[in-house]
Image (cartoon, rainbow, N blue to C red; front, side, top):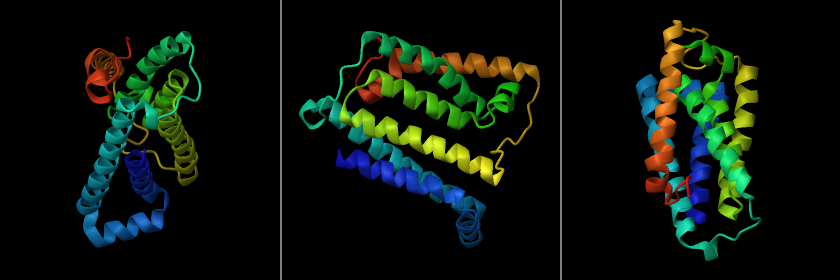
Length: 193
């Protein structure tokens, strides 16, 4: 549990930096835009790796991860269904589209749906800590970016309508890849089981 918690603290600490414009600008002035992005990326990846490793280890040792409630079967089906729009929103983060404009901050929408879906489908302590903290952080960050007026890396540009088709196709492909292969490979649990 400790590895996952350390990863969460590191990951969220790094992601709090953009919310403090003065701190972010100071770091950019000191390290340059490329250096800032590199440091941000490295710390984010280390935090994410610790989160995944810690969560994975807890799945292998159920004695260290107590069951708090037994989710009903329908909650797993609902979680599987919710992940499709989450993956479409995730892809929309990186492609200028009308979907991106409609969602305003599609990455945060994707994280909120992902976290909620996984909270519904999992009843153990590690899941509550992991997905609950991501959901809470995404809600906080959405409020924060709205107050700052931050439009994200793509701004308000919507791009041509074909981009919406590309977003949906790539989102569905990513969903299929994760459901059929990556989830079990990385987390050790098939969402189809």
